[in-house]
Length: 354
Image (tube, rainbow, N blue to C red; front, side, top):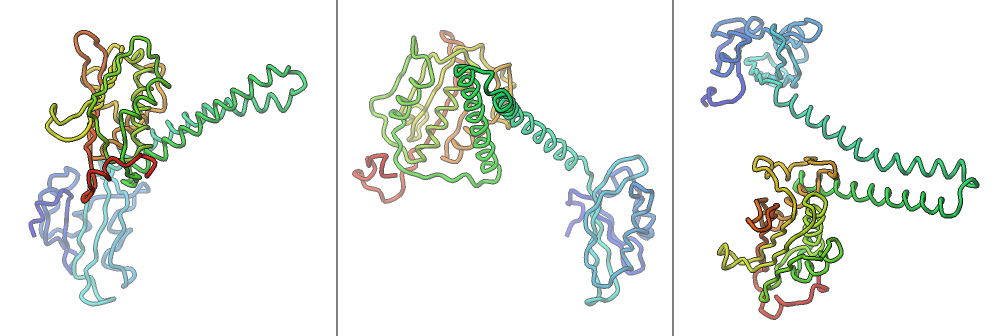
């Protein structure tokens, strides 16, 4: 096996505690200069935060005779850099003497970056959850302590505010659960025939101002096979995003994709009236917790949209609108995904069969 092909630094020492193999990565880490024949103590110049040396603390050739591995821990070089080090102990027989110590060394930079991202995510979650909870707590405490001082109209106003904040909190928790399922690859679909034209005609008038809105739906749009609720969620999030960040909808297209992209399915295009999205941000908008502008929500909506679309085998992207309308257009393609073995009659079954 070519040790130089490994991305981590590797040092192998024999039964006499001296180095017998070193890969290229270990030699180029800049914090040590391991050489063949060097004692493992000298080849591993790492300490813990109290100044204790790696070899002295771990005692790879001593300690319990049942040990086969030294678990990964953080150790520091003399220049202050953190490294993650673990080791395998190869014995000549169970509970026998150690014949080889195989040490793996990697930088902690990626782990620290992930830790920072996780901390940022937790801080974002705490902020998003605290905002509606603060409103709920404030109004309920006020009502409990001063109920008789308020009129029925004032009490009703405060209870409506509590109800709205509770709905907001529920939506946020649902989005967080959906995002975690997408991250873990556990987003499940209840597949059945979906009439996207009917879904669009239901969603758009409820969420958007239809004054001046162009609704363009091909006459021959057929059903696709997917999760009706999830596809409704996709359209809802895209329309709400256009309303919130794009100054409203200007046009919605529901088109048969066969002629345009050469693949059977449906193209959905959502045009808004906004100022557009900078080219460098068109992929970032699908990242978790990415926000822009004062009216930003949780930052999870488009992340979830992309996850649902990709789970259906489709794709989504953002682009500039045309020269007449300007703004941004969100384009979604969803394939037919018709299950194998269906007859023409079964393919047109009503959605309620799902």
